[in-house]
Each structure stands twice: as C-alpha cells, then as structure tokens.
Image (cartoon, rainbow, N blue to C red; front, side, top):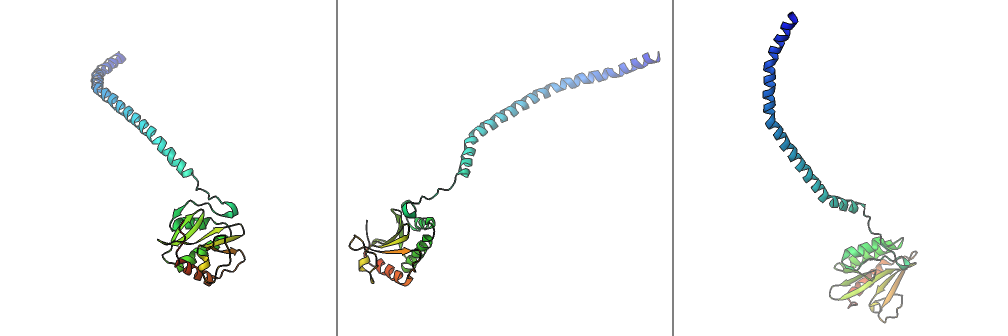
Length: 205
C-alpha cells in the first residue's frame, strides 16, 4: 500500500514535468528552423570556399612552377665564348664577363676596368657575342672576344695608334692584341691605346 501511494505521488509530480517538457518541445520548434537556416548558411559558405579554392588553384600551381624554375645556364660557343643576347649598357657586358670560363674571365675584368678608367663616359654594349666599347655619336673603338687559348682585343682604328698593336688584320685599319694565359699585360700601353682609340672616329656598323 505504501509503494502504491508513493507511485501515485511520483506520478502526480511528473505530471507538471511532462507538461513542461511539452512546452519546451514547442519552444524548440523555432530553434530547429533557425538551426536549419544556420546549416544552409554554412553550406553556402562551404560552396563559396570551394569556388575560391578552384579559382586559386591555378595561381598556386603557377607560383610553385616559378619556385621550381632554375636560372638559365649561359651557353658557351666555340672557344668558350659566352652566348649573350644583344643589349646596350653595362649590364649585358657584366653578364658576358661573368660567364667567361677560367683564366680568361680575369682578363675580361681587367680590360673592362681599364677601359672604364680611361674613358669615364664610355658607352658599352654586347653585339655578336662580344663586348663593344664606344663613344656616343662616334661609333665603337674597341671590342674583345674569347677564343680557346687567348682573348682577342680588336682596335677598329688600330693602324692610327702609336705604337701600332701587333696583330694584323685583313681590314686595312683594324689591329689586334691577343692576350694568352701566361702573357703579362702591359696596362700602361693598353691604357694609352684605349685613350687614343676613344678620340678617333669609331666604327659604325
């Protein structure tokens, strides 16, 4: 009898709770609709993110390909002469000298430094895979080129220089100076030739 009375009392107590539960369920109805709207917004954001990823995909690939790309190697032609694209100014000449192999690179640097000191406003260029030096409006007075066993310096008005450079040419006014690995470069004489040549009418291709 006592258990039945306790059961009835418990049942009486649970009655309001059941009603409260029903009210809570009724209240959760709008929340479920809000949850559905939040889910829809999340799905829309996911779709937008996928589209953005699809757009950025090629860009990321392009960046990776750029990062993997290697610097272009300079081609050496016959005699170890660098193949450098034609260009005006100091930059292509520096690129040519930097690409000269072995002991001939130091010869190229010394020649370039002597010319720059002797003719402060010298005009530089690379043509036909050779550095050219001249004066604006007056043409080119000197160039040099690498061969297997020597560096050949060309004075375009060489026959007018004193003393005349030793190397003969088929061209009536051109004279050459061949610099070999064991040669001792007479910088005083070479500087004199450079200054003389820069004051003469240069060669205009």
